[in-house]
Structure formats: C-alpha cells, structure tokens
Image (cartoon, rainbow, N blue to C red; front, side, top):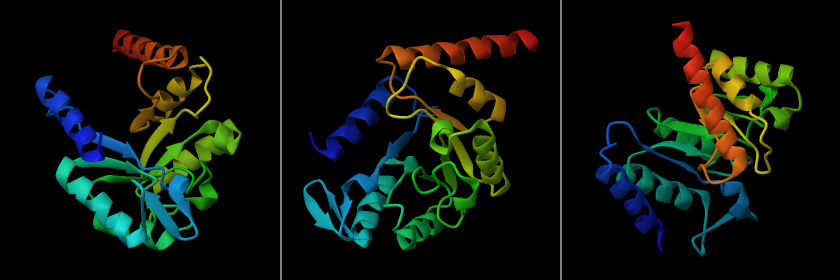
Length: 194
C-alpha cells in the first residue's frame, strides 16, 4: 500500500464516520530515522532536504495535514526554519529537536513541542520546558515514550498543564488503554466540579 493510499483510506474513514469537522490528520515523519550522510532515504528514494520538504508540502496541501512532527533531522535547522516559516497555520512540532529541555527551545525552528517527562528526567525540568514553550506561543503535546508502562501520570500532567494535545497511540495495548481510561476519568471529575 502506498503512502497516498494510506492517506486516502484515513480520509475515507473520516468522511464515512462524518467527522470531517472534528478530525484532521497529524503525522510523525520521524525524519531522523531515515537521515544519513546529509541525505534522506524516503520511500526507497534518496533525497536532499529540499526534495523532502517539497514532498511533505504536497502531503500538507493534498491531505489537509494540520500537525507534522519531526519533518527533518534535528541537525537540519535550515529546513526546520523554512518549513516553520511556510506553515504558520499548522503545527510543526519538534521532539528530539528540543528533547523536552528549555535551553533548546527555539520558536524559529518549530511552533510546537513534544513534552516527554522521562526525556528530560525530572518533573521540574518538564514543567520548565513546558512553560518556556508556552511563553514562545508554541503548541504543546505531552507524549509517551516508545516503551511504556500502565502508569497514567502523563495524563494528569497533560491536563494539569493544559497541554494542547496528548500523544498516546491507538488503543491496542494495555498501557495505552490505561491512559485513555485515565483521561475519561479526569473528564468525569472535571464535569463533577463544574
């Protein structure tokens, strides 16, 4: 299945379920994983940053993508800046680019940040990075790591900090289900307070 076929399948599902006003597409490009020797190898094709940017711009235009994470390697700052400058209306989000550390945050590179508490290592460091991102008017997304447990603290953190997004992944494993359940409980508690 091609990338275009996958996008079309998602768009068709959104349309069939009548969620066109509520749901948009977000993608994690994770470009650092296919970057080597100043070249990106994407879909079996070697390309420079400009070619990758052109490809990503086509996806944004064609599939109304509103959130794009890690479109380039974290050392490819020139193209982070270009992408950010070209797309003020969508979230261009840095993960490894900022590593949840306030000293690395630069709103010229991206207008959004992934917040991972165990990336910086402390709750204090996490909150400092979050606050710095908010000062810079950046979109914030509290995220789990690749290897997760059923601990749900990240849900409480995302709600307490009033993050724009939370990134858990599809509800297909126990650790993810636990987090979705915690978010539902937090919503119920908020309704009781109101």
